[in-house]
Image (cartoon, rainbow, N blue to C red; front, side, top):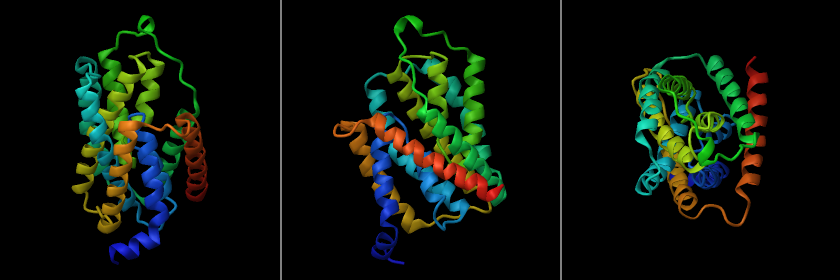
Length: 254
């Protein structure tokens, strides 16, 4: 199929990815959970779904990570234990060959957890109540989320950020910056693992179009944020969509 044919056939997905990239990039996320939720409703093979979501993640958060770094939001002494633990396990998760039914059940449960975490209202963190991070706890968080991320095809920021908020790890801006970097390295590692998996497949033309769409959306979201509509309301609407898809997948494959 030509690019024009694919745009005509999948324009709803392309537009949805563009909107999701704007929303998630504005808060330092890649949007992997929402990309997966949309792709899960299509006829794409599950091996293609994982790779496509990770590529779009990488496109969106690369720019966010650079901008956060330039603005000095990274405390690498605290960030590195999370990242180092996640890389090999995300690669392993991406490399593992799993059955379609197991994949979709894991995806459904992951999306369900992501939707709930998106709907939970986070309490503000003040400089006075920031706690000293535990090295072993950071290793545990990074490694476990990294493995799930590689296995399912998300960056893991949607799980990491709420955990760091609950742990009062740092202020909201630094948590968003850390989530952005975490998503980037996890997505690269997970995609790398998939490339070594004999069952790896991808829809190249559609993936390129979705990558371009998310790149443009990510640029908009990172630089100017969302001004016309409340990001909080958009996030809740997205969470409801993910919740719907999660239940649909779980009931279908149980």
